[in-house]
Amino acid sequence: MIGGSYPGALSAWFRYTYPNIATASWASSAVVQPWVDMWTYDEQIYDSTSQISHECALTLQRFQQYGTTQAIFRNAGENNQITDVLAGTPGAGMLTDDFLAYMGDIPAGYVQYGHATEFCNIWDGYVDLNEQDLFTAVIYYEYNEGNYPWDYSTAKGSKIQSTTIDTTYSSRQWTWQYCTEFGWFQVASRLHQERSEFVDEQYFANQCNEIFGLDMSVYPDIAATEAAFGGGNKINATNTFFANGKEDPWKWVTQLEDRPEINQPSVVSQCTGCGHCCELYTPEASDPQELKDTRQQIYNWLDLILNPTQLLE
Image (cartoon, rainbow, N blue to C red; front, side, top):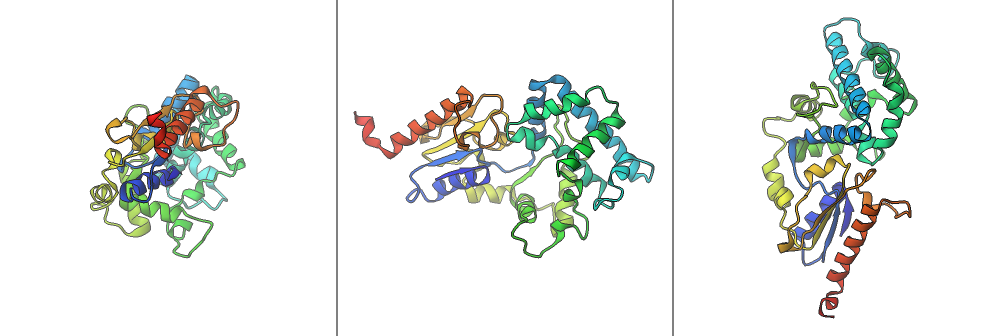
């Protein structure tokens, strides 16, 4: 079984549950560990961007801090830039905290998929801007890229509130999963915040309650999830290879320790640009050597499992 991200976790879980059917699992960026307040996701944003450019990470922090200040003004009914940039758009009435969640996710897609360098190259152009101009420049750049804050709206009447089946939209289903089973709430880091402190566990609890009416004193039911799927990152699935990329924020909810006693290796490709499911992409001659080495290690490992007679030669 081969899979990446949530399907990577499914691959490991399938091997654990049906070892008589699946001989082995290649679990890439496999999110097998439920975790409510996943602050390490935000910390990875800081770590990856600061390794590219310390100014990049600091500029991102200035942007988030200014946005938080504007959120306070907006909630108090005072003049603020959040209301200004949303005026005349489908997001004009969106909740302030949803806008802050949108701001926090601006660097996420870049870093998660190994494009921290590209992100910081863009943000190099913002370093010398004051906070007001920085905020405006970033938001309108994202608008031009098709990344809209109103896609994050959870208010009544928003798309995520709709129960109408839409085969092109899966955010409601994914939100239900993390609200009830896994958590993975991407809150502000405890060490180096790269998103607003208002994007906290309570924000996500309110979101889950607003959308689904869930009692968040009960959910997410981490214990039930671990019991059903083999124990989180201590999953006792034999013949399972966990592979991750250095820059992937999701690596903090996977298996990062070798467990040779059950043939469960874990390898992190320690290379710039190695992000989510990096070894599953089509190999290129220009790939970092560390990534090439990880792929070869996986191929060799699988070959020994599928062709055990080689061990006798």
